[in-house]
Length: 109
Image 1 (cartoon, helix red, strand yellow):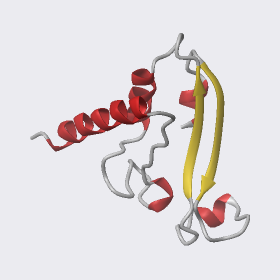
Image 2: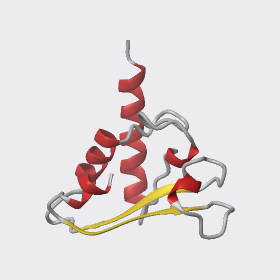
Image 3: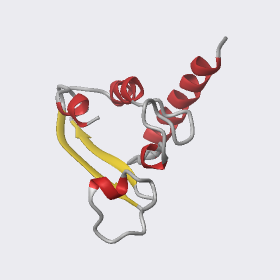
């Protein structure tokens, strides 16, 4: 995930980490067992004059299907469940609409 966002024109900061688990300071191998209940996160800061929020959501959906529970693609466990943190109500509205459209596409015959 980091490479796709990191190479996108307009991205000014990218940090990948894990949050919300119950193990203190676990390593990646431990987290990937799924037993620590951590969730992988990516914080992406971007210049919205160079890349729009819709573009960022498109990249996200291209590399990570946010619609199935605990299964965004080849990885099937809670480490890769989807959650979106937003900075304002407009981002929440746009993201909610984007995910609804993604679910419609995925459920179409």
